[in-house]
Image 1 (cartoon, rainbow, N blue to C red):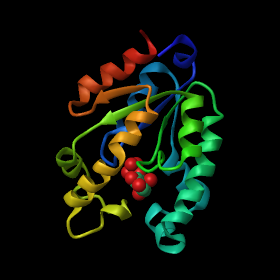
Image 2 (tube, helix red, strand yellow):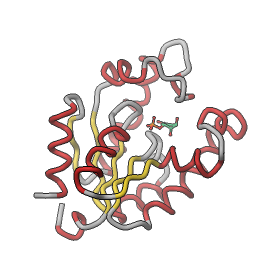
Image 3 (cartoon, rainbow, N blue to C red):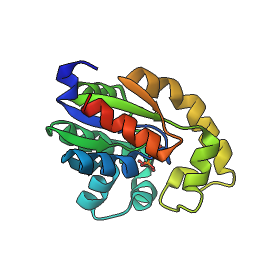
Image 4 (cartoon, rainbow, N blue to C red):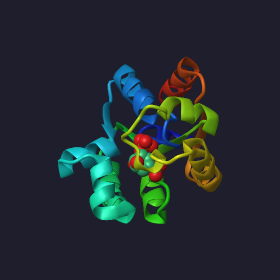
Length: 172
Ligand code: S3P
């Protein structure tokens, strides 16, 4: 990534369980940047959980809230932003994220994502009989989009390794 991008925001994209929130928080802390999680911001603003929004407004209702929140957060400066796994689904979101800074795809295989999301009830898309099949389906559908949206792709299997690679992006 060029200097201009390095000076902008650091934006993490990838599937549920890729480590966007956990790693984002740590990177922000070690770099002295503010951290935002778009799902968390949506919950704070609406006063309800993600599953409740899905229940009351459907996935499209959630996506509308998500697009509005991403626009707002992308306008901040020098932040670390972790996004929801579906943030790249709309072209308007992809453009807005890329223009806002360096977009990093945390690549993780479905089997590992399953381990990390196994006991989580806060992800409506995974409340199905076969979450592994769902993660595989999402991986197939989105891996290309994440790659095309990102400036950088990082393997997100080993936590320490990923953290140091992320920190290096901002302090080359
Ligand atoms: C979603 C991912 C979730 C959340 C919502 C939909 C997705 O975010 O935005 O449940 O479509 O992949 P995380 O990636 O933070 O779990």
